[in-house]
Image 1 (cartoon, helix red, strand yellow):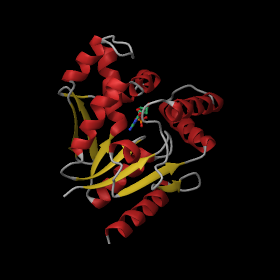
Image 2: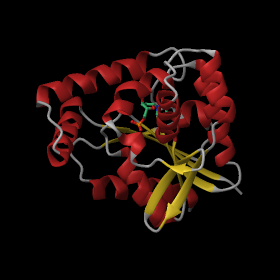
Image 3: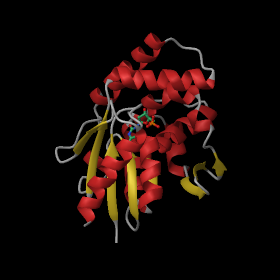
Length: 222
Ligand code: DC
């Protein structure tokens, strides 16, 4: 029997981190839909294919194989038989992935794949359109939000830790731009599903967000 928890929200809300923890705690299969768009962008960049509908991009989409594999506590992303978990997080992919994710041909391929992954298992799926487009009938829908300033703050700290050079103002500007692109695009824009429960992580720790979402899930199943 399938059971679907859908978590949507903008980048920098802690979505990925909390989803992974909840998946472990509750024994759910974790599906990172953003990683799938990152795989498309990576394969296209490897083959020097631009983010626009073209024969070359269709060819990539026709043959692309994306899989998630568990390796201890880690979840690996595999693209055409290769572990690309680190490669898909590069700054180059960060800069281009939104353009691929906005294309109809890309979403037409990814959405059915994502639905298929949830057909037979109990899953927790995170992204931008999980509760609105992929699983409009999800058992639990969460919209995880956070102020722009706090999201920029968190991203800026991550950059400092990784030694990536950027000012807080640049990071904030980038967060604002991405939010605009994701909420205003034509296909599957980021928005809160009407029946999604809003969780605001601005003033909460990761542990507090996890506890709040697990409480919502547990109330639903009990
Ligand atoms: O969550 P992320 O940063 O890994 O997402 C990568 C890109 O994919 C980002 O541009 C948003 C987009 N995305 C999307 O359009 N729909 C989803 N369900 C998940 C991610």
